[in-house]
Image (cartoon, rainbow, N blue to C red; front, side, top):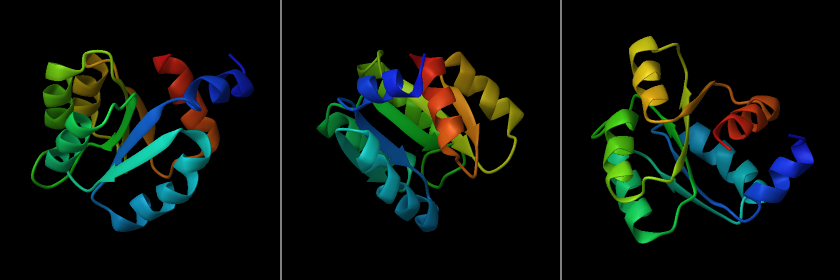
Length: 127
C-alpha cells in the first residue's frame, strides 16, 4: 500500500493519542491534525477510556507505561465496547512482555521517537 493510499484512508479517521509525557503529546498535536479528521489527546489510560466513550475513535495510539492505568489495561477496557478499534502502541523502550500483550490485542508497535515512515508502516500493518 502506498503512502498516498494510507493518507486517503486515515484522513476520515478520528485518532486518540495517549501518553503521559507532555512533550510527546505537544509534538503529536502538531502532526496528527494534518493526517487525521479529528485528533484527541489523553495523559493516562483512564482519560483515554473516557475519550473513547465520548467520541467515535478509529485509531488509538498509546504509550504502554503510564500512571493510573497502563496502555494494555486501557486497551482491554476500550475493546469491551469497541472491538473494531485500531491500535498502535508507542513506547520509549523495548517492553517485550507488554509488547506481546499488545500484539494479542491486535496492536502494531512503534519505538519512540516516532518517525513518519514508522507511523505509515504501523498504520499499514493494522489496516
